[in-house]
Image (cartoon, rainbow over all chains, first blue to last red; front, side):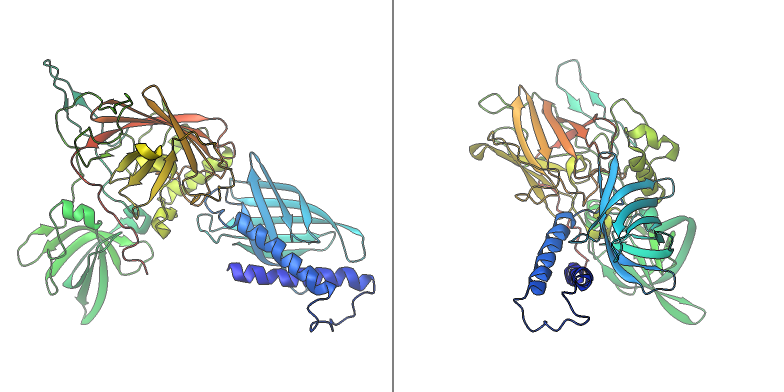
Length: 172
Length: 375
């Protein structure tokens, strides 16, 4: 499980890097530099992998405390579009829930996080920029399933601006 | 009020007899109702094919014939320590014995039954009955002490063995609160939940969820995870506080759960535990430093992970948990344990719970190994 997460960061960092640098004309549509381990792209991927591994180790023991705390991995996608992998890190401290979507170089801090423990529903809001640099708002609403198990899951709606989608993530 | 009370009789001549009527936990594993449904009583008759004499639960495998078809069933019983204490062994039954079993069917409709009654057809004898353990009865005495005057937390000078058992409370609840619970910490009335402790709303809802599901998700039951925190002093099979005077530390052993132990440092070292866990420690038990304040041992522990339940009954805890434990020994037979819970991420304020334990002299800690029949 941890191995899958560490390898997942490769996709996250790779996609992030391509998105950023394609816009700047620095990276072609296809990456032709895979054979050169010393290029900047490879160095950034290594950095991302180390960063995410450290993050996962630091929260790897979170299990029986607040049910929302932990690292959640799964997919989200807008209606009619391909599903994308996503990592959501949540942490309950004191009386507040906070977290990050896709930790890494393009992390999206969660602006609002609330949970209704009457029915274990979660509400998240976050602001980010799309690939064109335009501001977009994320509004995510999900319901917790299998509350008592280690690998509990969250699923629901994942809306970006005016576009609607769904998500399903599992606690690692 | 709990399943039993601790009573002490002191005769006029000053010789105190410890007569305890407390009822202790009979199972060191899951509450039967977590897996079996009391509303689904059943009976089966068949021949024993195998006896799996292992913890956390002994199983009888029984071949049951019905309608010309033979199916295999598993009858779940108490653990080996309880059965042995009641005089039963792995040889009580043998392959081929025909038995009649009455009990509760499994909630998942698998071919498993909790064996409330097992009767051997050939003799009519009921076997594998279990009665609760009762505390020993002996003459009480004054607090045993070290040469420096501090109370001994173990056997008196010149004696060996012994441990503490039979807690007068089976689950955490705030001092001054009285709610009815069974020996596993299950509430008799779920409406009493918010009286147990000053829960934050999420913690109360999680506690109720765990209670309403018969504690089935307890990591001690699902994965043989260790007890930690105050739960160490509420599990069956006792605790031992081994005072290593020359090393200024105490090793806290317990009989339940894979012979785990924790270290309590008394050498004046700095408390270096951190809320997210202390990398020097196994993390389940935090970083514990203590000192004597008069006749009371005061222990400060911080740096727990949240991979365990810190109480019977499923009261929640988080990595922000900070405990202050106080141990005192008012007489030979009594250990008074008091714990102050400070977990600002789960409770609205600090709160305290306390109970007594009984000295069991001249005995070794029972050995209960939870993972016996785990792959």
